[in-house]
Image (cartoon, rainbow, N blue to C red; front, side, top):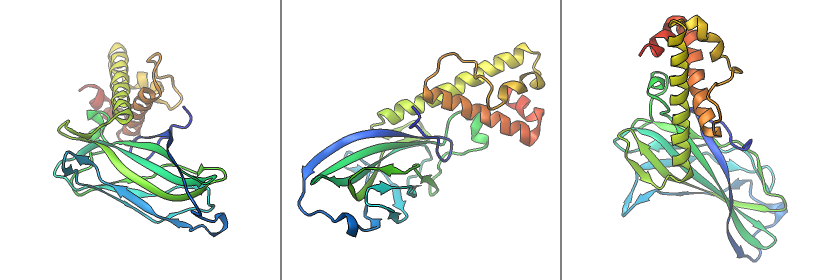
Length: 250
């Protein structure tokens, strides 16, 4: 589970994929003469005959070695007329190894809406605004030559709860993150009420290393619970106990 990485807005989970294609090649590249600026191919999200209007653009993707992809930065811009709550992007690295062209894919999931309380500090991706796609690296494909990078937004969740694409693991992860946030909020509020609605009495529970107190959780549920706790900790630092009280009294 250590390969799952917290990224950007609130969360982005990188899940290692498997080799999807394998085909023979002839003279596809010299390891010493590789290009440092590799091509990037963007694939649109189609629903039936329609293309979902989200736009992905990337900065030049440079590789320091033929077999190493470090970090890259792209943006997803919302060109629809609805706000986006969450999305999943698949990025695939096409590489040559032992005369074969192979492909490895990973998924980056971004959630801008975790819980209604958090809308105070982070809004969904509104029409015309953008979100960064910045998976952490490096990715090393030993004894290989990286040929290109491909990206596609394969799942979009809008603020009216409609979706585009097939969510798969991203959809499951999004649900688990939100479940963890809601469970933490409910559990903490019970403790808050049980201690006479005293914010001071629950402040130790908001510390970064404090137990979540929710029993066994999945990685994604823990991430959601920690995101909610981090939100409350920031509220307390910004507005004192009154800010936390206002949230938990609702």
